[in-house]
Image (cartoon, one colour):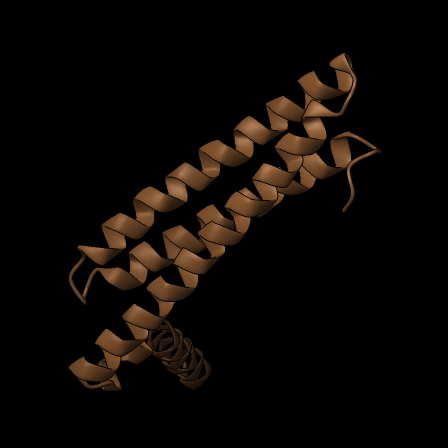
Length: 132
């Protein structure tokens, strides 16, 4: 019985610790939280610019490719563009979000950037002539 209570207590403390890790913003002042949000948004904007540049480079390489390679590469480029457009929308959504909602929105944007990266890597690897 004591063991079950101890295990239950340890399980509860792990849940509390996990919740603490998810929401560390509670200890921040509103000014610090706002600054963190702005910093994150600036970083996200720079990432979008970087991905846009990489897409342009892939498009140039696609133009220099043969017909079959171009078709394959263009398919992957379109997937990257679609994911990048979703990231742009999430950034806009984040800009307009309340401080309470932005953590979950930020996680969604992080996953979207992971999708952009994954699609880009597929595009790069789809044609051997494309530089990595």
